[in-house]
View 1 (cartoon, rainbow, N blue to C red):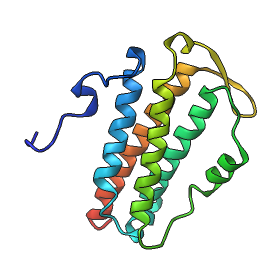
View 2 (spheres, one colour; view 1 turned 120 degrees about the vertical axis):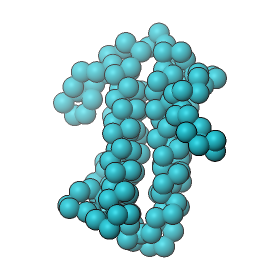
View 3 (tube, rainbow, N blue to C red; view 1 turned 30 degrees about the horizontal axis):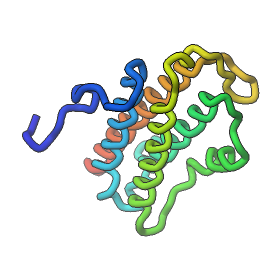
View 4 (cartoon, one colour; view 1 turned 90 degrees about the vertical axis):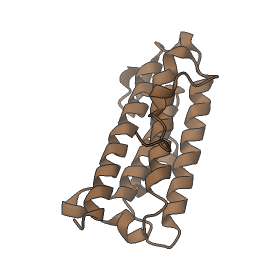
Length: 172
């Protein structure tokens, strides 16, 4: 590890102000934010929307990760999705081709993670096993299940984002 690079967030210890049982969720969301902030700002709109080999674009992975966090945390609060969230879901695949796209994407992701972290911080540990329904079908989950899935789903998309960045950088 180079001296200017910190260990991954989970290796830095507990993040003050968050419930002990939710530290893995906090670590995952913060790691995802660091990944976006480290990789996205230098990318052009063309790179953000490139789909090497038909894979999903870098921009899609970031938009979808942010949208998924927002939706999953809505369910964790025991709420249903709003019309605005449904519209945003349908727009996740639409690329932003204008200059400044990378900065807008980073800011959107940062704000989403900040809202998520505030909700996680305010989630009582006693509520973690409370039942929650997901989607119109009200598929069964719990507060903890939804928070955990928000974290791991986001991490999966960060891995795909980094891999796609490497493929594009290699000329793929």
